[in-house]
Image (tube, rainbow, N blue to C red; front, side, top):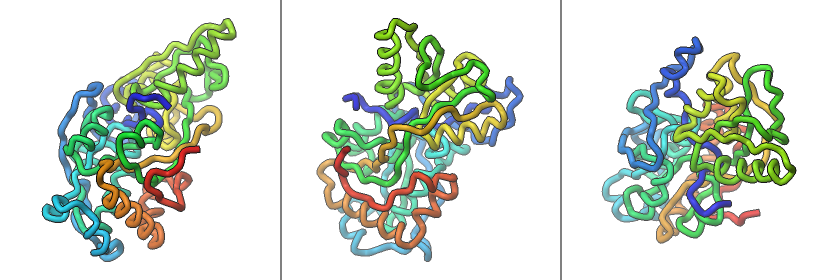
Length: 316
């Protein structure tokens, strides 16, 4: 894994591409997401809808007691996210929604607090946690050694990389040999900073043309590039790729197999060991109650469910 912050995949939402895709005549599920530029921090705070612990997800006072005093006093868990990565996190109007958000809301309810979200550039989230701008961050962060050196990470999901091409794959894109092809990706991701450079080097080392990489600030723009024919393929985290195909109707399809599966982690400040353990135990309780799987099922993401929720899991 690379030292700069990268998501596992192009971790951002494509739903706000409705306007950009309008010219193609596609009917998208209307979720007007605001695009963010690069690493610039954007502050859109919105509650996702779960305001208080429910009967199905009752608070555990013992876990509440493990939270920092500031969180206990306010009753609010400040959560940083980059709502540009549907279906994991995206904006619908001014409301942050998605699989990660449903999981985080359930965790907050179990902790006896309310999650309050700030939408910001992906590459600002870790520093937002270490700088006390957020109590935690959730945004499809792949757990890797670089991040573990800076923060605590609580495992909660497993995802791999998946390629996407135009319906019928008219350009005959082979993910295992994409030399000379134009491929779209979200920047500051594992795919852009690790996967594609390695594939491009393999091409040039073999005397073949390099992959032409079109890197975008948002996943929606990468998806749009394939729909509009400016790129012949894109790659992203497996749930994001599958959701993009679904939302474009007959325009796109998956290509190749899912590979390089790795866990996502909720980011917690390095000094908040007890708080990270509280989140881990909350996830385990939610799994035991069935609420964890239910949160994933809403977004068709059950295949990424994990059975253990360790803090700072060992890397394979």
